[in-house]
Image 1: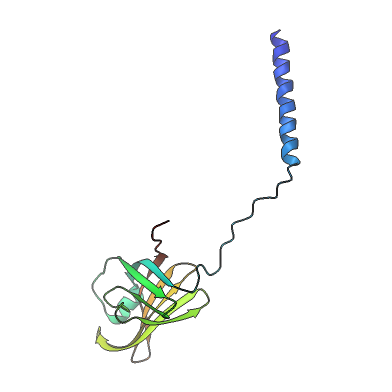
Image 2: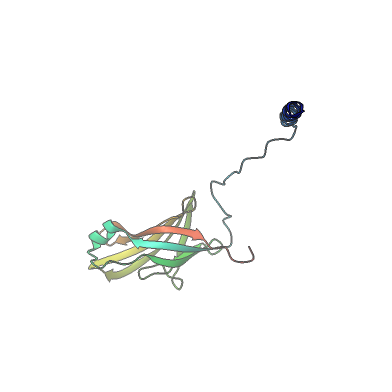
Length: 165
């Protein structure tokens, strides 16, 4: 009797496995679509609020003779597509009160403004930051009056999503 029960269970499992395999083989449902990532996320309209984690660029720090070690900073930035402007918070920054002009170049958002002030023993003729929308990479550079361009700050930014989620 135990032998017959074991044989019955084995045959039942084989039949169920065969039916299960046939059902999945014959399934006419289309495969689930793959997730498509946009090459340029977001629309080029409205305001994009960002939060950034920024550090001094070591090469720029050496070029300008900055000796102090600055800690990593968490700061806010904003791109306004309608006004074609942008800013970010910081000690040497394109500030909200004096925002820069926005230029779009593929996945890169470039914000710049002319300047004329002396700092670190050099005359600064312009400032700009570039944000790559695909990678979140942030680089701020200074244009010096002698024609050099020095990357001073680098980091990563992410879009701030406000409630409701």
